[in-house]
Length: 378
Image 1 (cartoon, rainbow, N blue to C red):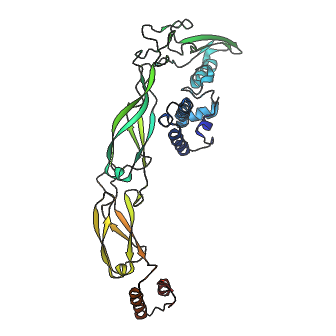
Image 2 (image 1 turned 180 degrees about the vertical axis):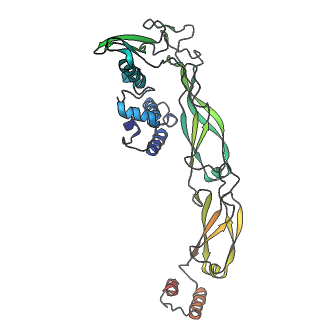
Image 3 (image 1 turned 90 degrees about the vertical axis):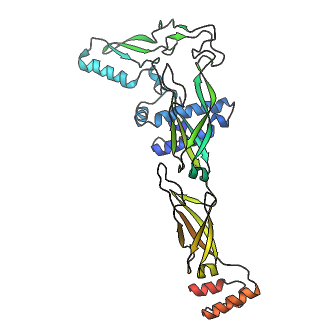
């Protein structure tokens, strides 16, 4: 009986945000697409999703913390024979303290396992370049998900055969158990352990799905990624998750954006930041500089005379689009003044003349102009 927190590798007091981060990390690490044919990784992946389905739901997590679990399947309270704890204790106290009397009997019913159940959701990471996030892109996404087995049409039985009525529960899907207690006779109605609530048993299982009625296959979906998307934003595609059970609807697919770091542009929300290196004369006298933008075009930036090292100039409307909006961020250009490490004789004489004119003493032994700049700022 594994601990759900241990499966997600988080402490029991972890925040919902920490649980989500741990889940995404582990899903990426153990995703079956990264471990084809690795049954151990696939089983780990299933456990991670099952644990997250409980711990990501505040109500389910609170019940788990209070009552514990005996497994990591779809019902984390399977140790109670499939009975729902809320139903069990609710019925117990309603009967005992609500007028049932100590001499009478009372009944607990488990939630029927053959009722329609929605399929599991799938979460998958989509890697994007910063340019793709800027412009938006239509991408073919490969998704591994469970679908109805076409070999047996979802029955789980080998073609030519069909499921039989469960001899233990006689097709009811549940069994009655009577126990004598201090309060009287207690009758529990629980999911049949032989047919798991379906009312049917399969003698000859389908070779394709091994009796489960569904198989895992790759599906390719064409997905439109909106312009302006950023890391950790999610796109929900309704009904693109795992197939439901007993006629239930399919789960949803959630695509989580992971926007790569660009070496030339740093993103801050809808704004972008880049750098421009100027020589000292350009910064002093001013210049017109061509700035390359993220989309590959060039903008002519007017650098005013007297521009200082570290100063920031703005190119309006050349940032990232704001998602679901017509607004666009700006491009901020950070100025860096380059100081040459080596000078020609002519350049040295010119610099010395400028130093004399500005009454900035320099060292004759200095091979650069570092000491002159020290004189300027001392």
